[in-house]
Image 1 (cartoon, rainbow, N blue to C red):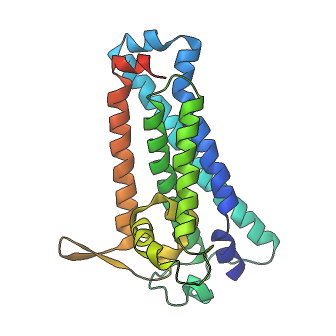
Image 2: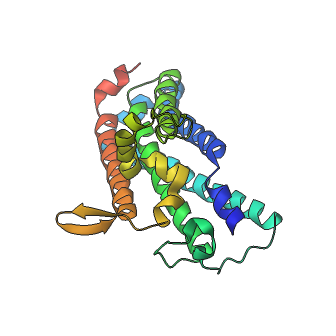
Length: 243
């Protein structure tokens, strides 16, 4: 159990590779219309534009959730090869979750972490898809989205203070990191399990709400907004004049 929770929290290289996969996929699904010369045919039909757009975003979002499931499967496979793992043991048996108020077993924890990572991948993929609308060449969206995805992931990691010497230099980053900690998809990807180690409440219109619930809702709302904005861009003629 300790091994499984440790592996869940140290999979940063896999996270970065999967983010790069989403960057490449998100950028290529729209550029292909210009490479194949089918852009004018798609644009000539309003229903065609809507249908094509929905299929493209469903493809990318399905890939995002598949990557989250694959990462969980890899973690589970490695955990089972290193020793026995009972999926129905309570997570409180692990030191990391000793004071967790959430009554989860190992299987529930795995499912929760997979869902939180999938939500984060969904939010970032929606941003990548939106950015990609403005380009007709694959290089610019690849560069911009890599900066957003990998750069944001690295900045969140830096602001956590893990790579800073204990000299007080981490103090200026504390406030900004707290903002990232509450709303950023990067922390959901990197350390989603930490939301379940203790109960953190947020004052929502005078009522307490679990931080993990608010963070998931914020990321889903952001994904929806970017997808709707992306469709508004996709159906307009000026996209033809993109880079």
